[in-house]
Picture 1: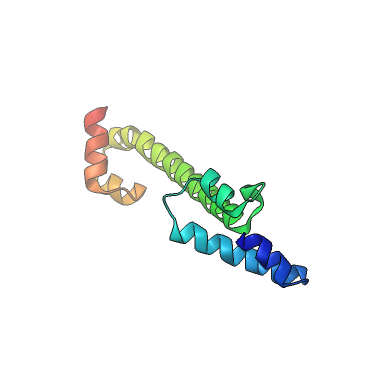
Picture 2 (picture 1 turned 90 degrees about the vertical axis):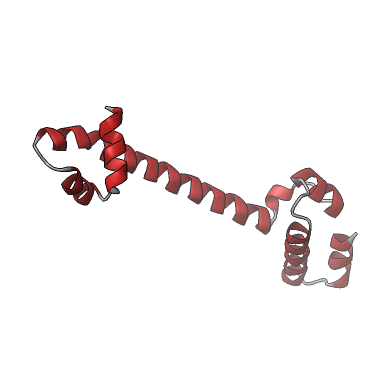
Length: 113
């Protein structure tokens, strides 16, 4: 209903798009517990995935997922090098400094191996 009114109020496509995006943003923030399907039904959208709000949220989630994956990979490599550094006689503190890990993390890694 709101979307239809926004489309009727203006013949300018850019203004229509801006109004629709504003309505979508308000609905998403005002009703955070609604599912995608409920919002889609409320706004009578055929495909919520085409909205800017959805696309931005999806992109942000993808970037966060990539960052977490990279961080896990980096941590795994840091933990794998600990035994070799220990075998060369480095102290826990030196290993922590070299790897950028906390002393406690290095201790835990050495206890697990």
